[in-house]
Length: 214
Image 1 (tube, rainbow, N blue to C red):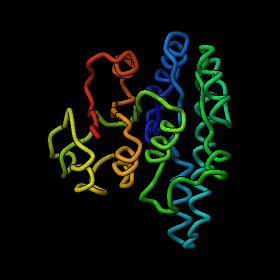
Image 2 (cartoon, rainbow, N blue to C red):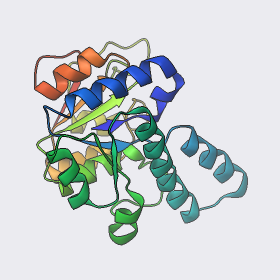
Image 3 (cartoon, one colour):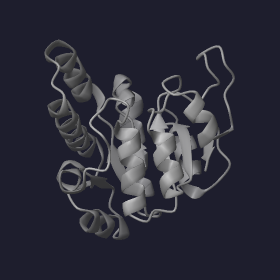
Image 4 (cartoon, rainbow, N blue to C red):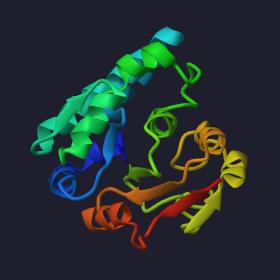
């Protein structure tokens, strides 16, 4: 599960989400991948001014680490992990397991250095490496809308092929459809501002959101 950085714009709701995730971790095995949040936004601004090239890529991934540490401070009993094995161990023991991706990606670097591939794509890669049954992306919207947002309708289901045609026009990053297709990963986009919907998603129950099919 990726906890998006946009949720930090809603402090009270993010705190409630983190409390919910801590409770659910005792019953359901899942691993949290952090978004970039305001830390990644700062990197974007610096990159726009200084044209940092590949440095911006690694700075943005470090921003994910920072956001992960931030999420851990809000999530009771959270454990920070820097390896896949460590993250899996914590999750298996009922802890809210937050995977910090920088160290792993320094060794494997699966995505190109571009703003087209953000924490969405990195989450898909890590889900594949973890052999996860599915990927859940928590955003500050109810799912993927048919462009243009917000005029388009909310889509309960969308294919990776359709997302490819809408590159840059939805709430997911441009490279995500390629990686989901490559790794054959089921993906669900859910509003993280509604913890009850997140719980339903984790339990495999019907939920308001968008399923991305491969």
